[in-house]
Amino acid sequence: MEQKTKLTKMQLLAGFLKGSKRYFVASILASAGVTLLDMLLPQIIRTTVDSVLGNEPFQLPAALQSVIDTVGGAPYLRQHLYIIALLVILIALFGAVLKYGNTVWNAKGSETLVRNMRNRLFSHIQRLPFSWHMKTKTGDMIQRCTSDVDTVKNFLAEQLTAVFRIVILLTMSLIFLFSMHARLALVALGSLPIIVAYSAFFHAKIGAGFLKCDENEGVLSTIAQENLTGVRVVRAFGREIYEKERFEAQNNVYTNAWLKLSRLMASFWASGDLISGLQQLLIIVLGAYFCVKGDLTAGAFIAFLSYNAMMIWPVRQLGRMISEMSKAGVSIERIREILAAEPESDRPGAIRPDLSGDIVYDHVTFSYDSGAPVLTDVSFRIKSGTTFAILGGTGSGKSTLMLLLNRLYPLPSDCGKITISGVDIADISSDWLRENIGMVLQEPFLFSRTIAENISIARPRVEPEEVRHAAAIACLDQSVMEFPSGYDTVVGERGVTLSGGQKQRTAIARTLLNRGRILVFDDSLSAVDAETDAKIRAALRHELGDVTVILISHRITTLMQADEILVLDGGRVAQQGTHQELIAQDGIYKQIYNIQMADTEGTACKQEK
Image 1 (tube, rainbow, N blue to C red):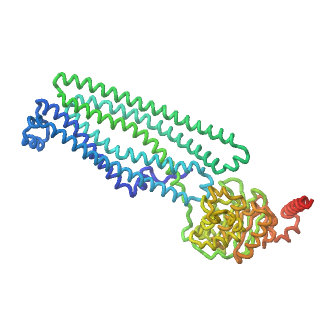
Image 2 (image 1 turned 90 degrees about the vertical axis):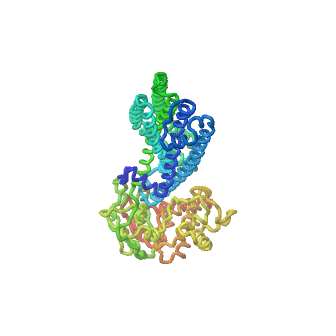
């Protein structure tokens, strides 16, 4: 995923925050209100101890002092201490309301943020080119879209409002501390640079640790995902023990990465606790000394300890914020890598022409990721409304020809040209192109939905009769009706409840229902028997009319009725012609034909015996 990143982390977060900013602002204001109320309590305690229970003069704002004098001053409050208790209760109740609002608004903001992130990621992934998906591990991508998104959400939900709360606490605490005893306040302030310095030191190490953990979690997710989706292969080849050991080995790597990070975090928190504890101990000792000397009243000393604890908390939180920021920074970077990948796009002025004309491959040469050429100077024409067949060995480039036709892989401008109805496919809208080219692959993907939903995926509002008609052409209807739930049968993940032939026929029905002008069958009859193969081909010839059909197969009997057959060898055109023309030539086609016909005759003889 080494893509050029266009947006900074802050710009990316700003985009995600659209729609949730007002909730976070309300949460921040509520948190600020709670903090200011918390700052009042030590002053109430100080005034009560020094001026109500003691004989020290009030140190209050003039307006508040005037109110107290009006009701009777310190003697009145001393006789009616319940007034002070009621004041404390009112502050607590008001603070509870603000805390409730803070929690609710914070939750709304964070969940809205997560929704925006997931929607944007999923939408972007849907528009990424096929080549990107082929190079990206599914487990890692899922981990980025789930765990990393949650990490960013948790950081913003838990730490965003905390930033403003910390700023208010630090500012107000220092103001009150210096107003009560400047020298003791300087001592309290002295530990802050030390905590900040060691937090910065640990920041880079913690970030690297979280990155390693995230990467190993992605590998672990990929192994689990592959085994869950490939359970048939694992069971068929008796690979359970091997796969279990492979998972356990990666799980150990993942666990050790977290243990190493935990030791680092333990050192970080232990150091912070030690510094904070020593600072508070020093303040208690010096504060008691100043009280004995008469430089500090008992109430002021109690208030000073409260404000010092309030100041130490945000500084300690600074360490937690830095560690969480490191983790969130890694996660947002991994998310940004996905969003930095260039989505698939059409050329400016892409058109939607009639695609019922001839298909022409003009000197096409292609290779994957600058490797060895898969296709070399391939040229041929597929006449409109005909059935065109492609035969070739494994790796000869048969499927690549169709991937290029559908523009799942873009053909570089200097590597030839593919045209439909005389129009370069690079100038055609990709949506329009794929709407008119139906592809049935050798390994069709079915969703964990009903058979009817899988067939009608391209046309969700299609009538049930049309679904059954398409299934009948694909020789699937009879098999489906044998299921207890018929077309409402849920096929399971990746169609696991269906046989290989049934999955291929479901994919064929799905493609037929799309009514494309061009239909491609890429070895999509390999899992059905010869009799069913013949029935499907006969039904296709009867139903498709002037639709251009491209057949790719290893089975000669599937291709021999085609109007024209192309033979590929090593990415080059080896032969081209009708079945009769090709078996009359000494070449690859005749060799394959003789081998397959001999195998067929041999099998028939054994059955007669």
